[in-house]
Image (cartoon, rainbow, N blue to C red; front, side):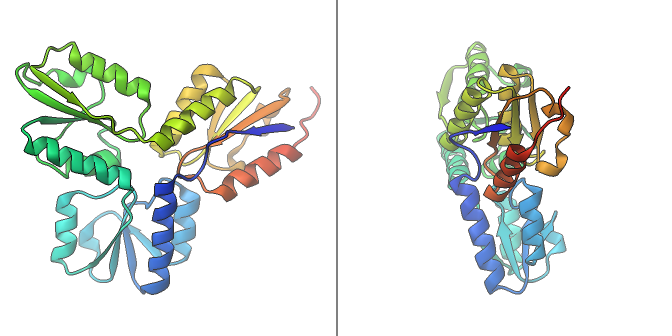
Length: 281
């Protein structure tokens, strides 16, 4: 089968840095814990777990050792608790996520009601909400009903959202007639370039595969965008999850991957796909 791979896909610099920090810390420290998965990819999390990284949900479960802050960041309250317990900290927060947290604090200090456009349940958004007083999450127009029209808003965005989604939400906010609105583009350029490359490729192939964690926001967004342009789009974590029936009658396949998908997953998938010979129908 002919296989085309997106020009931009796979690990972004933030994820690559987080994994390097995790590996370096595991090599130097006997007890290393992470609050939640370091990135949203089971293959990577399992590999690091085999190397000794223990993933836990709460700080209360950690009594000694080193705490690795995952790429999505942590709230100010969580960081304070870790310090109060006398635990060592290794911060693997993506630099772009740190920037969003810093912007949220600055906007708050300047008197703006801080609004982050994104998914309230995503760990990056929760970390930003917990980095400054009273940050509100807006996923759509329905979340604007409790705002007062005389408020001045400072608007930022979850880094892994798409430009179209951010623009549509900002447009809805502007129509509400707030007294002052300041918009800061906090979208990740790496994410945007992957989205553009994925959409370009999916239009050229019979079937499109988006590889990455099922809980990865940027991977889900890639799949969502590709699906709009090519209904034969499938979001999978790896080759083992592929139902070979979807390859029937297909001549050319496209492959892209989320920012938390390792090279070995992409390479393994492409190798199997290239060797696959669908039965004649």
